[in-house]
Image 1 (tube, one colour):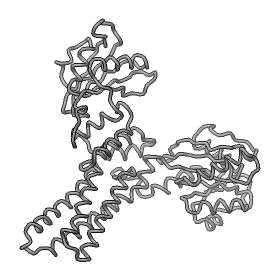
Image 2 (cartoon, one colour; image 1 turned 120 degrees about the horizontal axis):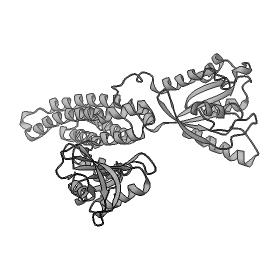
Image 3 (cartoon, rainbow, N blue to C red; image 1 turned 180 degrees about the horizontal axis):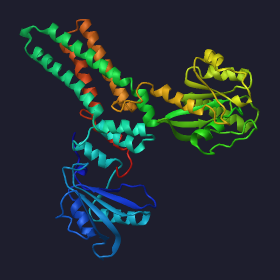
Image 4 (cartoon, one colour; image 1 turned 135 degrees about the horizontal axis):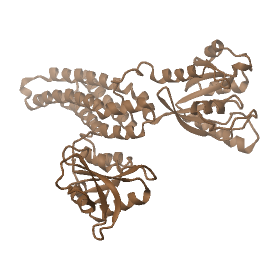
Length: 461
């Protein structure tokens, strides 16, 4: 990948969240990082210290010798660093003023303000990581559960990279044979070469299918499942939200229609990250405010990955309940028969037969059977993989899109061979699949795609 001049200069940024805290870290990377830090640090000659050491001293204003802060400065020399460039990290007292003052001092002395994700981008440009590992860095930062962190760590270790490179190598070895056949047609090996392309296309296509089968779980772990809590007014939706969040986020009363808007909260249920959406009770109403809430509930339902449908088990099914069951038929759904403490007119067996969904009978008021609900959520999305720490997953739509594109190209190769299309024509899609898989790792990605990906990172990462 071509490098611009700005990719050789020295960059600086604050790598810790802005605000009050124990410490803040200001990071620099580039060939002048040590020299710039040495001009503003009093305590050790950073130009002469061993790599990967930390030193006590003070950050000073070079001209006035004014002390800005007491600090510990880490020096890490290329190439054994995250960016494969010289890196200096200034550990100062946490606080907005002092941290910004140190950053501005470094910029004044010759560093450039880093762009979003530029440290990780340099690690990619300098061959330290590939694009899947770069995305895993972002996933680790954003991980909402321990399982999400484990999957991201596996990807950072190169799990997906190894699989993609192995598939590309299979294709490349066959491409070499194709090129020989095209260059030396007198050997008349068209049939052998075509069959080899088809065989490898089937093999790689099957491997891609296995990766795509993990996409739903991987994306769920990365982004969280949009989970709509749906039901008639006063059925216990807000009480369920409060239980799952272990807080009093939603107002709970015995007055129907208390919730007039959607409430959102992230929680982890058995390792599954959920973006819970407590909705207004869906019913016909003349109340203008409640009507707006009902419309927002319907929108949340349409966008949900998972629906928790609450029914009042102490009452017979109403026409409105049946409408909600029909409206959620196409969704992944768990039906909750609430208010079992008031006696049951609805049974698990009859509702399971009616809906074909997992059904849990609960009393949210008495916190009865709610652990069974949590287990049902886990099984619905992670059955069969939850105990596999070695699972390599596809975690975002960029990877999914490219894998699907590569699979389609390989299927076109198989079809071309079956149709006895000339080898050099069938080779076009075969070569295209090799390039497409390379886009996943960044080995054949356009600069625009790379820049767009790293722009999603936070400053200082």
